[in-house]
Image (cartoon, rainbow, N blue to C red):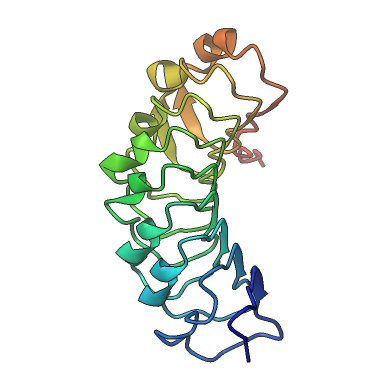
Length: 210
């Protein structure tokens, strides 16, 4: 057990942990900086996560539940959030309260349908992965104020729309993946992306004529 002087900084569950995380699961770990649940089969994130005020990195992919609890927005020091492959339908409306968030991975969250209005206030966001979220809406509107974005992956989504206005302010963008995406205005956008180093605009393979 932890002594009063012990400070647990990083915690990772191994060997395919299948037990449900209880509300008191993280009570002894108030100083936690890194929480890695990638080896767990998580049904739902417990509200007790909101008590981890010092948490910087949260890796919790493949959450079974459709809802990300509001308590996650209490993690004011969070800079890295990975929810890859989860069943979530939406992010908390107050996601914009994560003012220090720099890295967000929502790739393969195939059921997510929209980004909340407060998403556009994540001004420190530098890495955003929304690949293979085919039903998501409101992406371009949220991008307009993310001026520090360097890495953007929208590959595998259906119809993004007109990139011209949404991405004209992303002058620091270095990585852009629009593979298998239907969009317009890319040529106009590229003129202003002077720092771009990687661009993937591979289209869907066409049908071969017999």
